[in-house]
Length: 115
Image 1 (tube, one colour):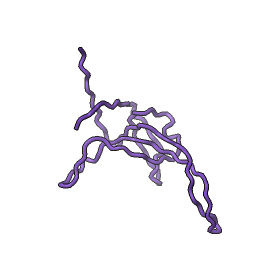
Image 2 (cartoon, rainbow, N blue to C red):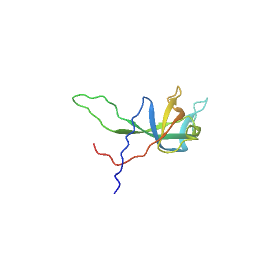
Image 3 (spheres, rainbow, N blue to C red):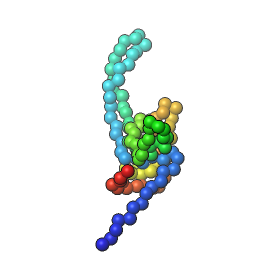
Image 4 (cartoon, helix red, strand yellow):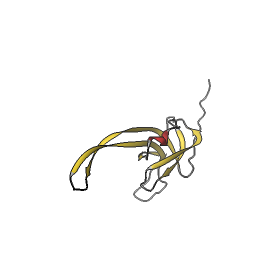
């Protein structure tokens, strides 16, 4: 009988795990130079990631594990060469959108966890 070996990944600063992405279009209301409102379709790009929860603790707060986030991206080129469960470093533009996701060359596997 073989026993399952547990390998734990330790995050380095600025690392995230990519779990997926989405793109589409949404209706947005705009205003022209004559202050007339109109609706147009605008593209959106989202990256879904996991990262460690904050290590901050106080009398009224404590967290353990990973947190999930949906991040806006500058374009769908961000995930062009990525695979789900890949560890990446993310770089943001001045509008706080992900403009680059650089792979660390490491992929992880999620197993059942207990806290």
